[in-house]
Length: 437
Ligand SMILES: [Zn+2]
Image (cartoon, rainbow, N blue to C red; front, side):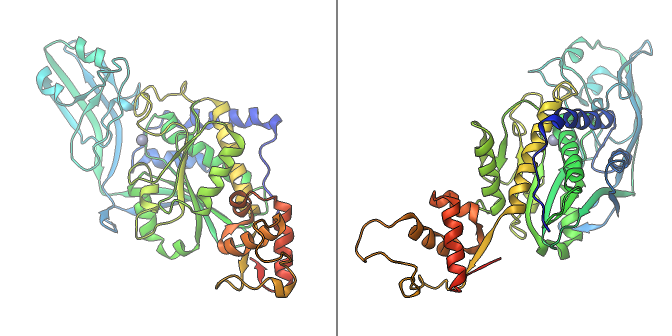
């Protein structure tokens, strides 16, 4: 038996927000990257909440056109001035190190050092987040104000990192429903101390899985905790046998700030998940954004690459790159709030409630309209310009019951009452023109 998913009770919302936020607080200090111990440590913490399966894919594994890279780990990094004072310290904030920096242990003058320093002149107090996964490089990210204060002289630069064969780590959690048809819920786990970008998605996905585990579900739900880009490419490459079962999917990111929701549609543009999320946003909010698919962003790029073209969209609040805190030290614990996180989770539960309860029929006589009059279903005198709602309901149900559209979709398109549509569907089933699927 399928019990439908409820939204979070209002009394629980506050506690849920606090639980989501607490998980973000625990994960915030960890230095994550696309590989390495930061991802493992993150997945170990998520394992306290979910029975996550952790997979290790060796360096050098070919995944479509890509290769799993060397594993990066870091113990320490700093810049010391001539007095021996640490003026930049990785241990105070991991964003200070260019992610994937090769090891360095040198003394150099300011001009040489400056070629390896990254800042944001527009926001001179913030520290940028920068990466160099595919070009071997090293660097430090500091505030622009600090850069302006640096004096000529010699600087001791140390990055105690390793970049060597190891593996790419990702987490997977499957909740089995009564059907083998799957819904993919994916989030990235590769950013260091950034809250909205990566930690909000991780926290919402973790608690969504916990809520779904309490229910009897129709679909199976596969949660992926993967490094961005290379993680989804790796997963898709190693799991091609599972792809035929994927019916819907959502990439989760940027769900903890106060701005309105934005949904980026799947490449298909009119998949059932696209229609459901649009409907839920319309039901719940007066203001939200809808973005057509474009081939940049998060892991929807891989799920929606033309060879897969999966019905996977992306749910976020303000999109990446459209808020100044994006990829900076200002995307911190003050930037995300418990109430925004719990609202995001609440919206996702409503989306899944509709997915789980969607009713679909199949037209058994889809080539041209069947003759309804001879079955006593179409009583109108031919030639009249108007038909009544019930008769229109018969035509809408027959036309859209193609296996892709639910009763909720037909209700929305036809603007007819769902009770009339259901009556029409029952009548069509009785005369074998339609069957429930
Ligand atoms: Zn990012």
